[in-house]
Image (cartoon, rainbow, N blue to C red; front, side):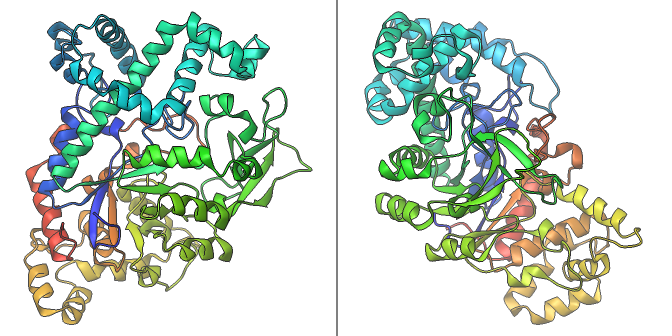
Length: 542
């Protein structure tokens, strides 16, 4: 599967999968969705970072940039390998189908993880995990041991905020002291290694399942890491931290359409000069780990590799922040020497400068084009005409509202004395894909005859009525019809869900990440419709 192929796919995070235990996981729900993608003629499954989530359920401020989230481990698979008993999976906690209940899911699974670990230690079941252990440790020891030590210490101290741990030498990750920690906490450290082993084995099985169905996986690599993480604790030299571990400068962005006051991400900035001294080994290990899990990688906040926004550790009126040069060419020359055939996607959304575009284009990374952003601050301008083949085109992202909600905002906005969007112009563009309109007839006239005949037979064109739903499908067709090689749709947009299904609102800590797909929504009718559209706009699976 290549990003240069004309294909399409769906954005849906693991936590949003339907299934058991109040949260999606790597079990039957994941396999069912892969089957749905195959039936719908899709080529890609894009998801958010699969690292451990933070206290606000965000996967973008994880305790590890390398580890997998244990909440995604499938209990049924542990039962099948003798690490759990039937009664451990017969009962499931109840909760709303449309929301992930992370705390309940974690509590439910935690007791079963401990039981599985005890059996594993006593050589009762777990044959496939035991067989994979040596290879897993050989591939991942450099990060899995610091992660496991960090988690066991955080349990003892009651916090992942390592800067307030009472023992200074442990705070500073003194190697001699940590040798003794490994002896004293051997069992707890082994437990956290075990969790990552389970995740790794199950992930490989899941990925093979997708490969058999010709589904490629697109992963997300956040540019920054969480402050309270194994990464900053074990590698403090690589971050802009003072001698006490406090952030000297903070990552963020200046004012934008999401937040007029800008955003403070509470993530430490890198000491890029130190990364360069070490030939970017931390980053190379990180990317290598991601490539064992995904077929293509979305580089979150791509602008930060060219220049990053540096904010003071605490808000200050006389220091609003400044743009600082990033590692740019030197970083990517090193990365692509190590991984010459890697498929990277440059998340270049927001206000970019010419230098960012030049860096992206130098290495041929596909850019991102989002329909919802294509008409901001514009009159009588169709930015979709400027989308290029080497791009990922989508209706929205995990950070935008749903497509149906955006359209409602468009309708409300048109009533204002000075509307933000040019509704009448957008409306005319969308009518190209609504049967019975003059715009539709003109669109048929410029299509290739074979494509025009196929388009006229689409099941979604039978009603021929202008409605919110037909216009939503018109937006989806606009994206499919675009020259961009890869078209991606958040699952919420395909289902026409309202703003309550939004995944994340940038800059807002609470109320995000919990939307969950109802299994009943994965209908044969939806798969057929999406498959028809995919074939019509020649985005067939290879």
